[in-house]
Image (cartoon, rainbow, N blue to C red; front, top):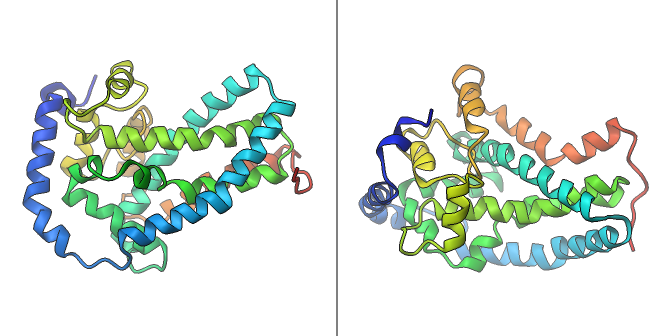
Length: 265
């Protein structure tokens, strides 16, 4: 059965509540101290994309063309989709945790992420390029592992993690976008269940202790149980789980004896 919030609230009611919250907190958000402004974040992401992630994507595309086939690509797409859903939830838990705010680097990202709770609708108004660049560094960390992993399937899965990350990012953005501004592709993906509905994500913004996964939401029932009964959302051990997700390709490769020498074209 769908959560109560999904049964009662229409998409328009969800957006109206989010807009009201954004208006209420707008002044406080503008006055909140920021350690690093938006332009600096964008510049960092842009340099990371051009100098780090893009060369790795080109490298993986060349390997896929040489070693892969259609079946491998389809399998990689599916595995990347299955990976990004729970990974997005763990990342969300970590970045929502104010205990990480004093930490260098991670704290700046966490504080920026937490401001979204005060102004939920702002995510739908930000420049598209700036928004799309946000997952660049996490994707690059994972993509670097493709250099020493022999498996074509593993490498193909890593390649498709970048578009899967973009899907996750825009699933979140579209859940805060009004119906009139929401693109047709977003409406179709939400209707199909491939990405989460507005109401599903609104449940998170109601109490901030559930529905952390922000791609499709299918992992949230299990994740909600874990947050409720195992580790709460302010438990810092979730960071270890997140690191495990980032280096899962290496863990799998080592476990299966699939690690080779660093490979470059």
